[in-house]
Length: 151
Image (cartoon, rainbow, N blue to C red; front, top):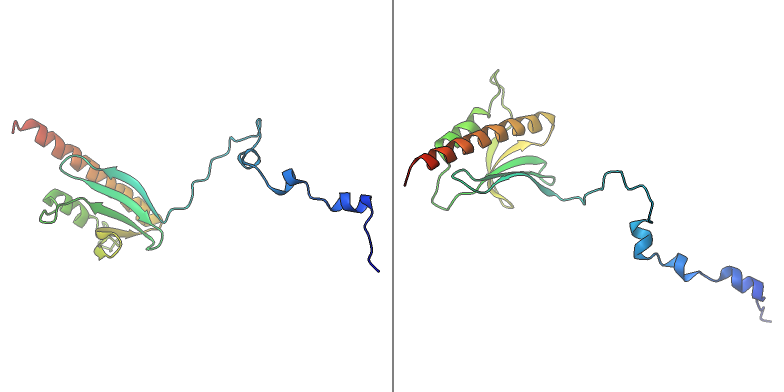
């Protein structure tokens, strides 16, 4: 014997198509919703923080979540070397005032090439900000030096 459902039973089990498939409007929110909270950015394993791509000193500061480092990459030609002033800034920050190593080191990585890396922790972030500040000052000084020479 086959059991048959009554009309009331079929109405209860019927799926409302609007409720089953959310449309774009329901995903984005309704008019009047409070969107004052910060919007979340999608996770990016490599995220850039500072880029100076003009002038004689070109570099980029970024973090890499996979390597767990903060990195500085200088844009140089294949036969070009880093200016001595910039190299001195990087070498000065390899040790703190007491002579303890800061963790700053030069690496040749497969993913990013030749970079200066610092561990991505509280001390590393503070050190990276100091280095970034000194490099930006140096870049401005080098740009002013180029602007003074007529050739």
